[in-house]
Image (cartoon, rainbow, N blue to C red; front, side):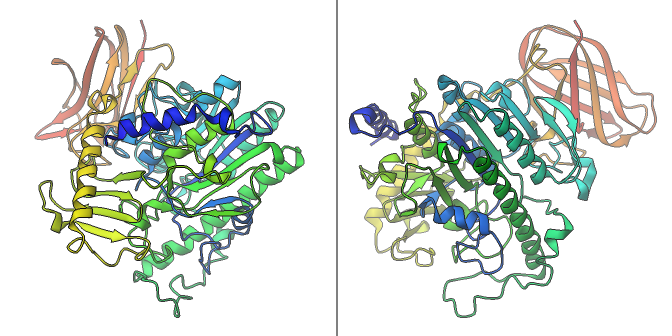
Length: 585
């Protein structure tokens, strides 16, 4: 069955909510989603880690509905687009974490936009990673207030305000508050929490949606020293001597990374404690639904509950994460083993908050409320699709489909026979150690057929074929700064100098002043080129050792184009670190 037929059926079922008696005591509860970055399944005390101290999250878990088989995408931006929209990321135009593939199409409807139907106040604090320019910023996608860093992480090339701070990028950062640069004092996780609390204080008498998206414990692994000192002397590989689960060997660097990660997680735990206390102080805890989750597996090798793989893998260690949901009308504590995923969060919130789902689109997720309320439903027939490769999905490579207890994993060629795949029965083999594909080829072939069918449908998504463009010259954002996270062209654009890069843009007609910023100063007597749809403009640079070259009063007609800048000096073509375009007329 094609997945679109399945989800049309699901959408029909959602219309029956009121008939089925799932109306909540409070029609529009406050919603808080807390998501952390690269915190794996094993980075909590409650999931069996003997080292990390997370008393607040552990207590929250014991008071929540725990989904013990909850799945996300293997990496950041795809998870976040699915979380925000209830759709597989490829439908939204998100296909990568950089390479120009982390811009979500503006025609997507986010949780924030959906909740606006019920007059929710909406705020995001931390990591967005779904587009840094109009029309894909949080303010363009339903958020009244936003305090974010740019691109995939602070200190990364796309975050132009923190990149040059190096090993201090998490401290005293310049962040983007409602699309304006503002300087803050303190540690990033503390800042994001403090500002989220201020948002809650301002809006506690009306329903609100607070999206607290920590960028920690993502690299660079920077943490206040008082937290690092708590873990300085531990051996993160110890404590599992009598544990017969499979564990990866840890190098000394892995161990030191784990110490820093655990310190960052404990800081997050303290901050979540501050937020929960504020709910109590405001007497709104019972009126607030809280979700805690993480976005993918750990980036580094460390304890992950014995599961195979880590961030970037479609094995369990890369895609299975903790998920806790707490609300006063739910049972105080309940474990649910049914397979669930990030795509289920939007439809779940829609049902709980009594707001209509986005229309005229496929919603891939299912509301989890029937499971939470013990009403069951048809979950055995559902399947989940996973993939991860740079730039675009590659058929059969790091791609998986889970249905029931079986999971088919492809780490092979596009035309590989079924014997080259892996098949696991996760009920009998939760750590994916025993490939049973040869003994179960009929099951494997059926899963492969569905895998290919799903891939073919998703790869043909309109928002993927027609990639989202950054709009330049609009009154909504002027000037526009194009950063390297959103640059396409040569595969793997990062901080290299000599490479081919471009941005997909929509230019409005007019005159522009343009600045080209370089990572390192460039020599004089080269030419700065700018190409747009075959129209080439260039200027001779006469300054020696400058890292900024300007073009003034440049006219463009209205056009959709690839904007291609490079500085030609001798045999080198140097790609700018960022480009600022300001419409002046």
